[in-house]
Length: 319
Image (cartoon, rainbow, N blue to C red; front, side):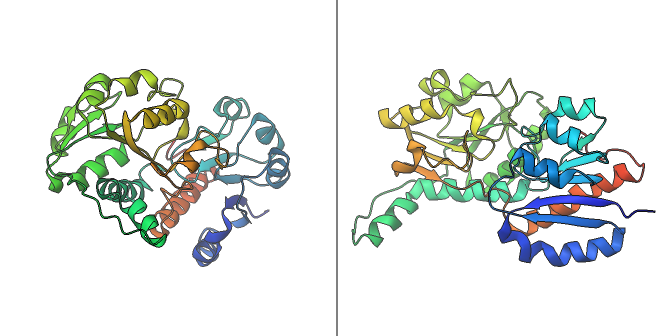
């Protein structure tokens, strides 16, 4: 009987971290891992060629189109290395009978910690003060504390809950918008549910943690930003398409928004984005889940997802 093979696509800087794990895991499950390390998402043709004879596929940032599913003659299961599956054509997956899964909760702590760190840095403007000092500019400035402020969470899933847990000791008011409110959960995390308009009007920080869906695309647009407190701070650790980047840029230029921290962009890499030219934008290269702990948790869960399907035990985390 042929050994089952799983294609895994990862950034090159993860090779040292994941190689020992994959070697042990291959012995454990008796599968072969076809691992591709690269720093740019694979083009469609390259994915089609790589997937031609594999049984499972751990997806990173590459677009998985109908052509890819058609090329996977043995393919039965794909799992996103993370949570967001907007780069996967799920209709095509259904057409070809391929199970699609993701790794809910696997990176929520990493993203929540990054978000909290950015909030604290924005409150004291640490990034720009550091940059000034490197330029031999001694320009101390007065910041502010999180205590007593209002934080609005757009999305109260795994990341939103973990961030709320971390924010509680800071003495902030936490509001959350979510399509599926759970009052018992809100009470546990010290959160009050609110409408988008209420969050816009009251929040000193607005932190985006929604999935990218047709209903959430450009939720943070010019109309929403016009309703915010003047000088609000906005963070996006979810997906670039949830915030209208042109509207966000205009709001910073007008002073309606003081500062933006974003780990995601509508087009990645965003080398032509005006965000990169303005020091009121803290820009990061999609590193929310990039911790050793989260990577190994995600990879293990993604392989578990595929193994479960291949061994007839069903889809553990269907999308």
